[in-house]
Image 1 (cartoon, one colour):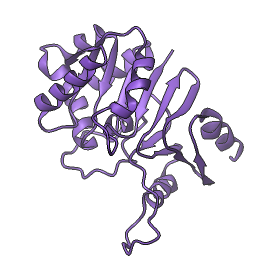
Image 2 (cartoon, rainbow, N blue to C red):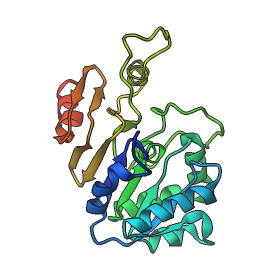
Image 3 (tube, one colour):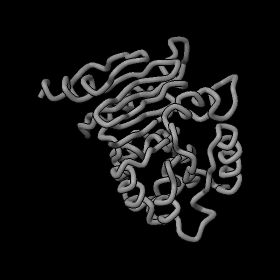
Image 4 (tube, rainbow, N blue to C red):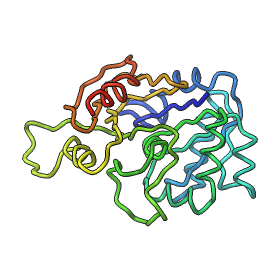
Length: 240
């Protein structure tokens, strides 16, 4: 059974790194102890891996960063879970291609390895990185991502500020532009929200809500705890 925990943000205002997600992470990983960490979204991979290792140890897990080992694929295979952290999505996806880990992680998760992704790590769990807000500081060979889930994630979702004089596109407008060219559903995750996937179940968790976007259907507001599978796919199919 495919399992994934997709977190909008690693740090919530007023709390520390992964503090707001600790309870869900511990519950999600259950009996897992060894975590393979992918720090490719950060420029300083060593510093990022140290932060993740120290935090995971406080939760009772042993973390090994794939950039520290001679055989990253074996590291994935010998771990109980994989965690991909946030940062720049283009840098992350390029790192996954360059290291040969894109297919290795996809296959491992298909075989049941639990997947945790925060921010950029949540985006690459979807079909592509086309719903990222990041600047393309590097160019990956393709926009195609892991495809662990068949919907897009747009983390750090911000609602329009009615008092703002900024005339640029809102995040909602950008996602709607994505849907003009693509038919994959998208979930705009607010800070503090996360999606937990357990086989066919797709559940919105966390302390805030999300916006669900489907081609040809008005965006819909969703509050946790809510089951998203029917909303994402059954209604979309019926509208075609």
